[in-house]
Image (cartoon, rainbow, N blue to C red; front, top):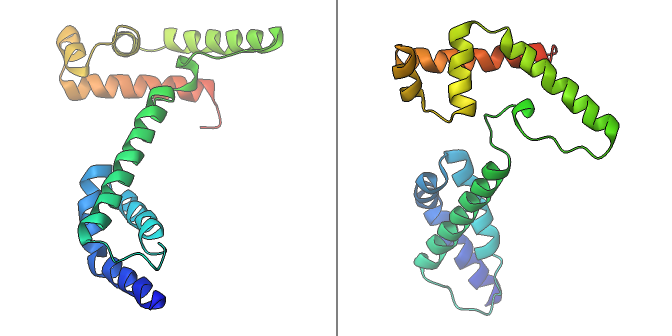
Length: 169
């Protein structure tokens, strides 16, 4: 009878797998992540103790929902610590020795020199975006350009500084 319960759980999982993925996708933002969540839900749902009665379908969806929320929370914490679009030279750099501190200062001086070498509009756009915290819309108004142009100026300025700071890219 224990094997039957496990098979019933597995059958229920298989029957609702597509619906679970469709349910998780808007919660986590991508089909790939939704499939990962549903696979993890399988690990929580199917191998349960065989002596327990088969839970309702809602239990399986609750597992997916909770795992999705957990993934979003982890991402928010990670993004708060490691913002994705900020290059390494714009983040604070911890240094434990005087040599490391000197190296960081030299790298920051290189970034400042690279920024000084940017065309004036690109440099202003980057300063407003990174240091003043203005949105692309606010930058476009300030510079008298479209939002798309403001975005291009910021993106190109970051790419140029990155290329000057890391010649491998």
